[in-house]
Length: 398
Image (tube, rainbow, N blue to C red; front, side, top):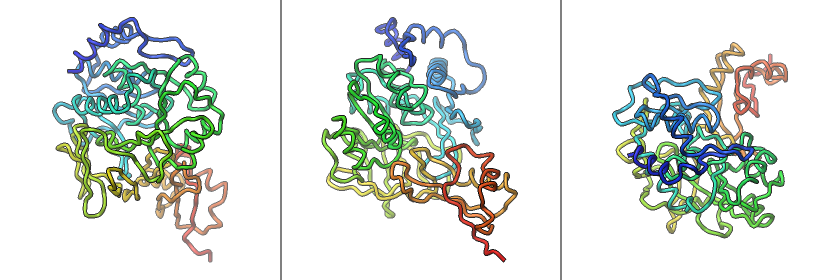
């Protein structure tokens, strides 16, 4: 299926740009195809890790040669799936998600295509120009909005090597029309960093809550409507706000995309039925439902007049600026660095709404012992986004 789609894209657009570098130079579809066809991957998987260009090449090579592609963030090690990939697996995502547990998710080409096609049609991406890859394409949102649109629909992707204001503008300025996906924390930085959005045909936000304040700022200062989008890595895009005006309720996640149905579980969590729902996890937790076209999220969402209204997440995952983090992984690193047994990590609402949550560390130590030197030492194994912002000592000083 994929090979036929790709061959058609190469036949029709071979000399056109498939991928733009930040300086405006391009790799054509024919050149990209030649690179992927030249070398047959060895082993039982293709590792897709690195910047957007590396992910694009790895995905194309694996899809064309029928070898599962495993997506891994640049700063992470590959997780070896706890079970053999199910028959038909074409893509393996390695994510934390709402549960707070890092696991592998398995997808067929048909499930991948269903999500890509649904987004392409609903957001009219074929008429929006070049997709700007300013966020990580190792995450589902960035992947489906940009790189997979190139591979399945021939929509060119533009690589912004850094998501900061000036590098973003440098990358976008080469193109008359672009569509720009981002998370709320980045949208805030771009708006405050005086990014010029004159050639942005579509602005999309996902990953965490989009505040009305931020949405209003974009409209008032740039006449730019940021469209809120909701989905999960397990089942793909669920809904989006397709209106041209300011939402009335910042909990509003928009309306369902065609072909997606939902219902509430007794505890208010949203269950999604969709052709883009994956095959399942490599390890399933008690009470989870994932597979057979259905995924039960960790999110309590109200259904009202055709709109989805976000209430809260019941999962243990910590959402820091759209990046889902595992409390257990952070606790383990602090335990190793500090030699402590009693470490509890959880998320708490941040004072910065675009950030979403702050990481809180509770330690079996007196509060006075948690000084700057101690924090520097125990955070030595953490990535910058894993560092707790709040520290709580639970031991009373003697």
